[in-house]
Amino acid sequence: MLDSNKKLVERHFTELLSGDNLDACEEIIATDYVEHAWAPFGNDEPGKVNGPQSTRETVGWLKAQFPDMKMIIEAIVADGDLVVARVLSEGTNTGKLNGVAPATNKKFSARQCHWYRIKDGKLCEHWAVRDDLTAMLQLGAVKRPGPPAFVKAIRKLTGKK
Figure (cartoon, rainbow, N blue to C red):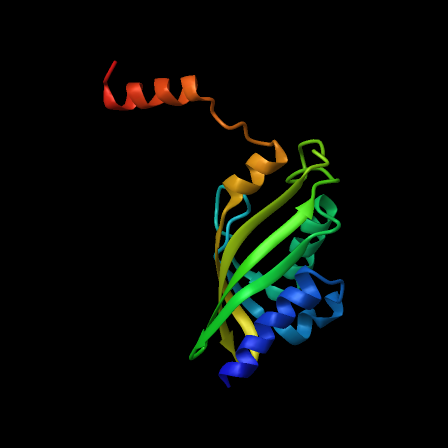
């Protein structure tokens, strides 16, 4: 059972997120799905969603920004109905970033951890810990503070001159 759960998560990354087999959504994702992962710099957790439909929308949103996006599983572990995958996510931003900002045409490479709960042979719940800051710095969407700004901010926080 643990191997089949890991294979299900592997299919999610290879066929849906890195590939283009969205017809597999109904095979992999439960209709009654709970999404705990916020969009980068989002304001709220999606919660209960229609799993296959939500996955199609998420993949479409990601591929519009990063047509060459790949999510490579570096490690995967299963325990009971839970599977966790450490993933390297890479791509080139050639579409509107987060659907609003102009494309940067820059590449990013950042790691993420994704936790899934499996029920009745389908993914039914998801949590994510992503390094969005590294990705946004690489894409130029967020500016790295220079030493003077950093030092000034630390002094302000600590009250030291």
